[in-house]
Length: 133
Image (cartoon, rainbow, N blue to C red; front, side, top):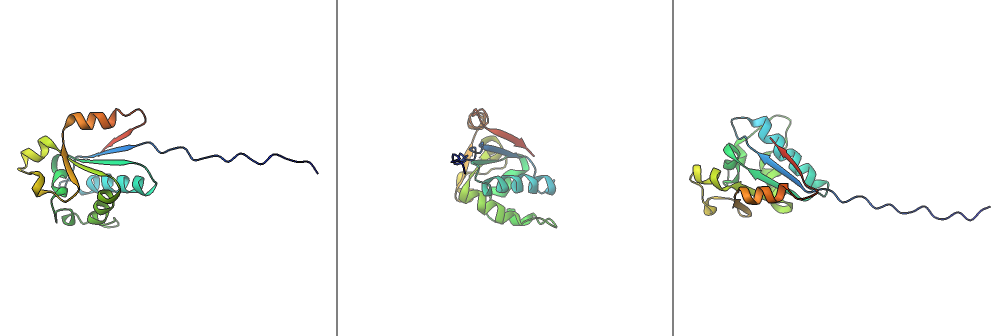
């Protein structure tokens, strides 16, 4: 019998930050739901996730609006949004909010309003992966 060295313990690589930009709202429910589903799946996998709501997706940051998207075979959007608010970052684009007359007080607790400079900073992180839906 030989004395074999124990196998090295390999640690899992750190997950890259994920930035998801949702551009669709009730006008394109499948695209909107896909953005939230992918972002929530990444959170569940342990990734640091930043979800950006732009264009018509901005409305999902308003209380009660996410419930308006009901899609067969999909996790309810309010459930996905709750997970993202608890475990990730949810941002509404500054210009998109302004065009819709939305102020910080109009949004769900935990949602921030930020502009292009913050989006660029997040997406240019050396390890970041960005997806647009």
